[in-house]
Length: 274
Image: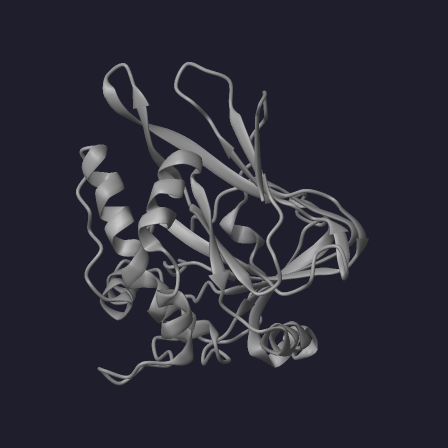
């Protein structure tokens, strides 16, 4: 369920220097699908009403997706937290003043199933929205038809480090408003998947999206994401109606305080990091 309200907010960025590199080299060779292969993740992604998703993105800047992972698959991904060899970097929220009682870890390639499979399935579904948004803003859309081609462009621009993220919040944990920007190459949409069952494994921990409206107070949206479901949301900015037609509304995201329990999420970003 999505709740919206109006109010003032302050924005906080985060520095790329916060990544504590664990020594893994930049990885160009991610898991690739053979052309024509259809995975169970493709079928789950295809089950979404993508016209409705696009409309909700236009209205709110975010939209819930159907269940992308089963509870067993969620548990398997969350259990990787202690397998430190699967990650290239760990960032502590308190140490870097990004929040409290939480950490996030960047996966090293090769990624565990279903990280790459989901990114490959989601990218072509999100691409029409990305191109439409840039057309409204009079910007050139530089994203090619496939994720592999787009990541190659990122790598040629010096953005070679993988960005899929596993996040964990303990009780009292929260994440300040921020954007996941790692260089000049940016895909305007990303996806987060809740790996825990809200209300059972944790209370609180709503996903927050705050949009700065042109010449108006900011608008915030809070979403409680069901277990295994995805939420697609704006990475940097999105088009909103204005007196001049369309204006770019800056958007930041974060997580409200987890009151009890523990919250794990999988973050899928569609551009790599410098």
